[in-house]
Length: 103
Image (tube, rainbow, N blue to C red):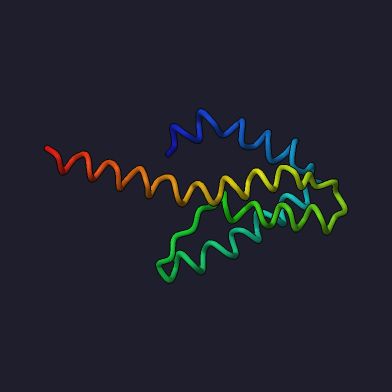
């Protein structure tokens, strides 16, 4: 995961921070604190959440609240990616198990 962040992190930050919405520094800080306030209680009770997935909603929310121009076309793309990020790994895992059972 660290390698993926190293390789693709700059692309993700550029896409969210430039193409989707440009937030003032204070609004970006509020988005980070909000996502942390969501992630930690769930982690405490044993429910793991994706920080990237959770962070997208506070970014959009703070963008709307600060009247920054939110590119809702990009939010559609991220919504599709969220759905696919749950479905595709499950399908790939099932296919992998079926293939490994052949051996």
